Image (cartoon, rainbow, N blue to C red; front, side, top):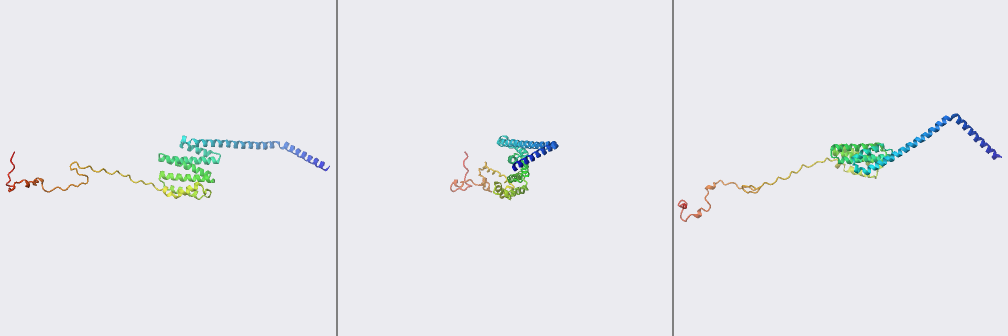
Length: 270
């Protein structure tokens, strides 16, 4: 009997709760509809936003991959702006970091290959902009921070090479020291490379001087046509005696015995 009584009491409590709920719905029905409808609408908007971002990220990754595979055919110059746009608008952090780093490195490569100083300056500036954006947005991520600082140090070296700006040495040193002293980059290739660059920084930023061009040796003077003398041969000094006043060689040997030179008769005329 007690069990049946308890069952009846529970049924009465449930019926009373349902009755109260029906009364509340009749009284506040409009408010309930608005609340439930708002919750459903919020869920639908959230689902659409997540789905749209997922599709956009998928398209951006596909575009990034296509650029990587075709940049040799397109040329690096045509990819810098494309990678920068992907990095600026990507919804995924990983994609943004990859795209900004690629834009910066491609611009640095173009600066090294630039045919003129103005082109080198322009590409160096684009590289600095990409790496600064990478550093600004992802400073809290060690790898992105290291890539950005390494790229900015290389850009400083480019500015010294192109413009001869000696102050860029301290700019490069500051970026490399930041990598060297970053505990989150310990034992990474970026830190090892930064230490190596610091050890040779003075040589990197040493002004390049060129020796004056060596002129070809002068050709040796040709032998004299008049005397047949060789170059450097010094002719003996001329005699003070007039050759016409000198006796012919061997004249004394041809005189007859017992006659002086005055008695000697001239040779017969022909």
